[in-house]
Length: 169
Image 1 (cartoon, rainbow, N blue to C red):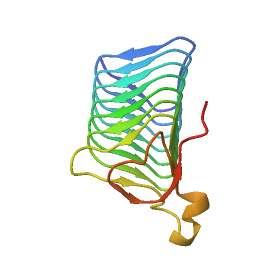
Image 2: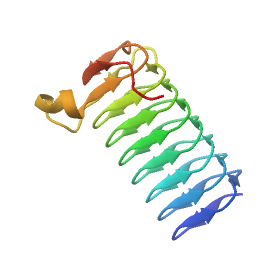
Image 3: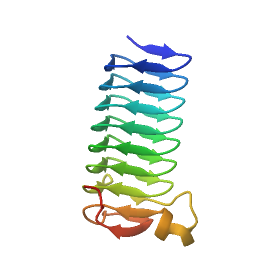
């Protein structure tokens, strides 16, 4: 079924919900987070391993994932997004701050960050969409606050400062 919480949701192991998951505050799990529909969290999302969702993800603060981050639709975080593995979105990827990935960042829609984008692999937006960094900072500060780092320069880079390959190991 679905899961609705007026406070925090915390699990030492994983969380699997076949339908929607709504949490008013923080969601934390040491294992995987698997959600069969939309995921809405008012605070932070912290996942120890993989996060796989079949609907949209709306997070009021930050998303931190210890493995792969896969969202079938749009992912929108009020603050930053960090994943040790690949970040994949079936539609748009949007972060109020920055996005860091130990793998690649791939969206079928636009990739938008208020600050910097950093990936060990490639950063790719969908056909006809762009890659945007620095949407929340002044153009004069892009060299420091809107860097775009990836294995290769993203096709369709519309804003931000290309800084070359990521120093991530």
